[in-house]
Amino acid sequence: QTLHMVRTVPQKLLDGMEDVLRVKAEWVGLHFSWDAEPIEGEVLADALAIQQVLLNLFGNALKVTAPGGSVGVRSGVKGERWVLEIWDTGRGFDAGELERLFQPFTQVEISDIGKGWGLGLSIVKSLVDAHGATITVESRPGHGCTFRLSFVLLATPA
Image (cartoon, helix red, strand yellow):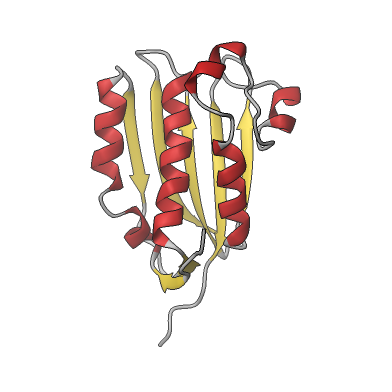
């Protein structure tokens, strides 16, 4: 996939996403949270790729969270970086599973095999890397998961 990187404010990358994600979460019986603070500065990004990353991570959160649980998105600034987090209160992962998450054709649980090819997170990682960004995961079994994307903020031209 060829990326079309342009300078843009993070809010533009998220335009229209809140309503789409809310509907998806509520459709499967989950509580939804959206916390996106205004951000000064821009990132160098391909909007469609970032939206694909967000949709993939959010779709995974929906799959692993039982009805009545919660899913959400947080967007804000930490230091000189734009941080985008996708979190859930789902089943979570243990340390051994976290090590394998971004490997292609990997399904963490046998019940996941019918839900996809195990390529989504490796594609996410490739797209995040192509943006010069980082992706980290925090999780504990039974306590959910947070995927954290961190992008360099560029100074806004004067």
